[in-house]
Amino acid sequence: MHPENPLHSASDADLLTILLGAGNSPPDQDAPTVQHILDYLGHLPALTQISAARLAQMTGQDEARLMPIFAAVELGKRLYHFSSDERPVIRGAEDAARVIADMAQLPQEQVRLILLDVHNRVIAVPTLYIGTLHGVVIRVAEIVREAVMRNSPAFILAHNHPSGDPAPSPEDIELTRMVIAAGKLLDIQLLDHIIISQRGWLSLKQQGLGFPNA
Image (tube, rainbow, N blue to C red; front, side, top):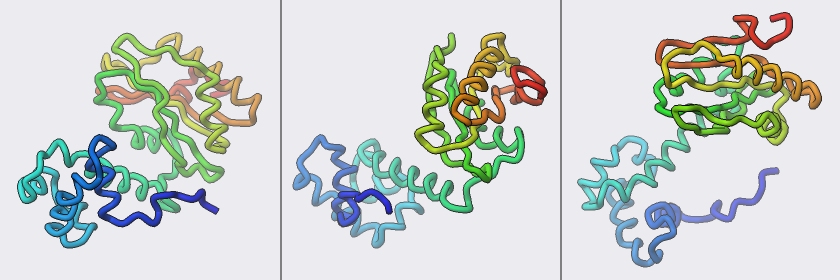
């Protein structure tokens, strides 16, 4: 049974009003604007077929003010992508690298987990840390806790190197060993540690770094 969602019974206009106002303006103030948007669209799915710039032009709204609506649309697309059997299956490092391919272009270092179910399908790809160009401080307990909270029996650790060089540092290798050890205590398996950059990606497991008998 899914937890009750208080917005489940809200109308399309109610949901758009929440997004448009973002809690900063009275609902009555945004009602005419929301109705104008709905009248122009004709039906809500049309939001997936129009750009923010076009909707702003046709409804006389500021494009920036419409961005929360389009952010919600994009989130919906991503949630659908990871639903049921359409979730990616991770068979190896190449599959994992595709899932986090966007990290190669990030200007700041990020740390993500690819959480997997018992069939190695992706459950979620949460971002644990966003650092600076000089790196981040990573707590092993927080990494393993995320897998426990999502009931994930296995996961892949991933981070990017904004410098462009995917070669692991001694700290990256030691972190891998520590996460493996922490996972064993909770019967959660670290399958790989992927480092990605503009020059490509590297699997620590493939390189035999940090993984026993890799």
